[in-house]
Length: 399
Image (cartoon, rainbow, N blue to C red; front, top):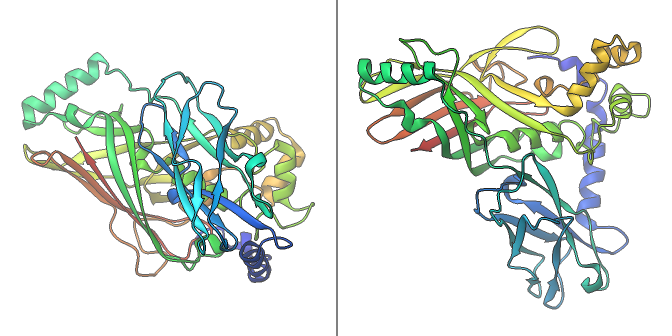
């Protein structure tokens, strides 16, 4: 298990910090009934071309005595990219939760991701109530589908002639359903409770440059396995959104110095993208193919281990790398002391080829294409720095 020294001096304070945080969230502040907004499955992302509603959960600190109406609004949505459904929201007497939905207007205007804020109409806010924090929704442009090169087209034609299969049905934009079996037992409160999450999504898939005449290799160039936003949420909960350990080490800590130097905070606008290459099609036949998905990944210390080799790009890490590449002595000291903005350090903490956690959640990482059913399925494990065991992941794509 990697990098455990990183937490050696802080685990003792975690329980105290967690207890204080939990009490604060449970009781509110000075009697104020606070309003908390959260996206279902922590997946606050909408693709502009997809009008599948995003459910927003509204939770109060305490129940209301009489039916209470809350009016939410979209802030800075000058292009009217989104709309609200089920708004205003009415919370029944004796209850403290409700939901509404955010939906794309499918205008297809974006060329890059943007953030839109869901806030509340303060003028209509009942007395004694307060919005704890606005909800930031990331709106992604329509995914760019790579155009196949002549070489790729020739390879696909060769597979069809040799094996009797048409792989083009599994290329382009593919809808997916991702199921996460999360173990709980993690270091912080966010990862303490076992749960199952269902994440609908879509992935852009193409033929990898690693493909040969005998072996097709697939590459997921956008939202691989439907996990981009979930991985970003986990990464943030291990870093800038962690109010129990990572952000609580003091002004002179490597983490705080890192944040100050590169301007990385819980509210800084960053871009986080993920791709996945090297999905190897083996035992190819007219009815199906086995998919090998594990590959080597190098951690922050140069050590190699076998995981599902997601490749991350992250703007705050780019800024840190730029300073390191310039030979900035202060940033090098921060890095040497464990101040990392590199997602790889926090995500996939242990290898996936063997059960390094020695728990019950490990399973073999593999995939399969069933050409007769028109399905492509995967199972694998992931983990992170605050995990208590592996998270099991099952993904189904249907053409």
